[in-house]
Length: 286
Image 1 (tube, rainbow, N blue to C red):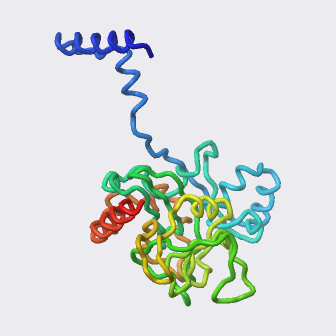
Image 2 (image 1 turned 135 degrees about the vertical axis):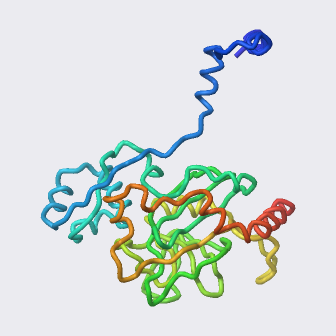
Image 3 (image 1 turned 90 degrees about the vertical axis):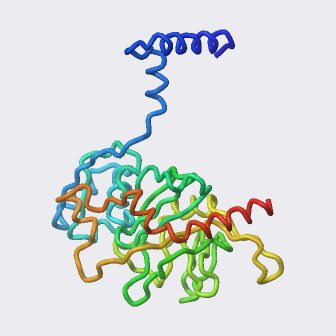
């Protein structure tokens, strides 16, 4: 836009403001429309019960839609034909964030450059930049016998491929550690549709690679002198082991799993001063 055009636009806006016109100029309306906050779309879900019906669905559904179905059932596509019950959305046209429970914005996080949340009850994760949701998806967290600890953690070291400390026959791809001494991190591994890990946070390969590249490592001097922490990671809530999978409730109530920005705020509030302090420390080193 040229300087003359900008001047004309400002003059038009001032003219209408000074004359207290009730109707907003069309060009200003257009600008206001473009900056509207993205909102959640209400998507309905239905239950599909019986293996035969699920196998038929798999056979007649394209690969992109199958990925959506697998994600909202917290599993990998290859496991879908083993289920005797799944949920399916009424609309496949939306971006993946519309199918998951995290809010698209959380204004209280506006000063936090990066943060990741893992929700135990909904088996989902979300990455935020300055309060805006930039990435989300399914996870498979710790099983009942080996629960994932909850609370605040920070990403530290990472490896494109490493070996599990629980079983040296398990190869973990795109691993990002969040608890060094306990060996807990998020990484790619099979997601069977329920919490199945040995304390870690399992992700699809696509999601694990994204977080691997997106999150920050710690800055250390020597072997144990931490100069700056990595990206904060909040793990919260509890899973209803022994009950129906929580996402099945979406068939009766499409808001059943919704996580509000106020929910995130109450979960994170006590940790915010420390998160901001460590962010400032990291920035000072950069």
